[in-house]
Image (cartoon, rainbow, N blue to C red; front, side, top):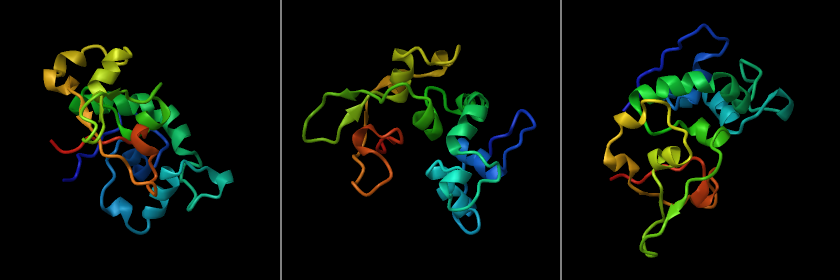
Length: 164
């Protein structure tokens, strides 16, 4: 399913692909030629001096883009997905990894939900908690990443819950 394209609230000097990347809203076309190389550059957080796969149109790393546009992204994000944050927030803004919740050792590990994490650390935006259901605070089972993936084991900031 294609995600709705986030609208920018201000005129900014960022290309459309980088903007969609910050919003977890890249399209299938973004993952194909010619944009796929820009996605790799953004995935690896490269700048011009790091010898990127392709130069970023902005000349900035993903982290630099997040610092500049992250607040704007979050304002858009919580309108449709309260109690969660986009992948770049977990990479560059999360103060600590999500906590593991003890469960059956035979099952994949469970972690506190994003909503529980944000509430525990006082990171929910005013009015955001009112829009959440009790289930939003339930622990989530998360599959470990294979050793060859770009994530970092169970505490990757790219954690995605298993389908319910």
